[in-house]
Image (cartoon, rainbow, N blue to C red; front, top):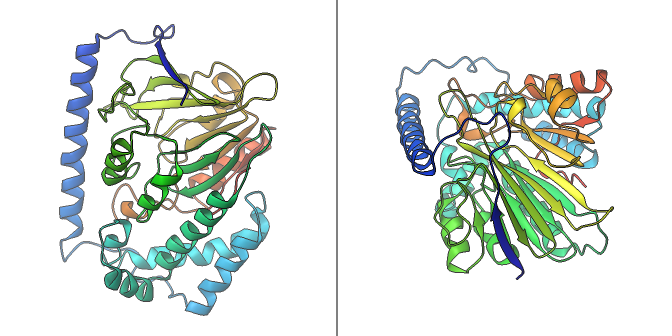
Amino acid sequence: MKEKAKQGKPHAGSRTVSRRAFIALGAVATAGVAAAQTKVVKGRMKKNDPDPARDVVAVTDEEFDGAIRQLEATGMYDDAKRLPALRVVQRAIDRMSTSRAFLPCLHSQTPQKQIDAIHAAFPVMRWYDREFDRVFDQFTSTKVTGDTPAIWYLYNMGVLVKTKSCAFGIDVFHRQDMRLVEHLDFLLVTHNHGDHHDPRMLNAMRAADKPVISNFYLCKRWYCREFDKTFTLKDVTIHTVAADHQTWLPWAVTTFEVVCGDGPNAFTIFHSGDCNRYDHLKPKGKPDIFMGHCAINLDFLKAARETMPAKLFLTLHHQELGHIPGKYRCVAFEDEPLQRVRGLREAGFKAAMPVWGDRIV
């Protein structure tokens, strides 16, 4: 595998910080996130946890399965055709917050007998696994011959990409993600939050001597805490830049500008993870696709006008099931995602809102 890495200087306007201080800041941020997640989990276990979704009208299996068939028969630009189906899915998700029993389905170590019971009780979890199977089949069977890669939306901020010479994932987190290890050449992880990576998968990639590029996982040659660093793997060039997650998590996210191929036909993906600062989006070129968190106060419209000259804007991170209930809820399709997409379109930009299982390109 062709590989190299070079470090650049921080962009103009970046806050200067020593490498030691930067690593220390990352450690503190990670510890703070772990403490916050523990608090949320404990809060969910309280029997008197208020549940605003108790009165949501139940969804029948027939109604839900019809909605999923409609989503699979349409594409990410078909908002009008998809909205009735998305509303059915949202009702089913809102109903799930009356129970915590589905949460084990997000983890790969859950026994199959328990998974079967969760599938029977929660139709959304059947969809969750069904779309992984559908993407997995397409991903493993697709042969890319041209310069444009094939790209699938998996779950949360997770995407899979296949070029004519390699395959990789960005922020892959799914109960079944271990099935992907043998089919990936490398993995990119934007930050150390549990809804963006699976530690078991990272360890399996490292054991297979496959690169994991991140700002927290100590994988030989690929650890990236620098503000500006470039990697090359086969026909892919990866530019990384540190960015804020939120004001209390500065420089916690690594954004990835991934150039597939070279020359005039190269295809560029810019994945910003959970970056919430449009002014921290610093592409070196004009990305073909920008992927951003739809509900972390990232100003998509300012980004489109000032810092992110992408040809297509995609909102991701909706329907992250581990976030319900509570402050960091599962983001409803008709809340931030669709509003941001419509705002971009009204301003003359191309935008879309994919759902699990969509092939983006």
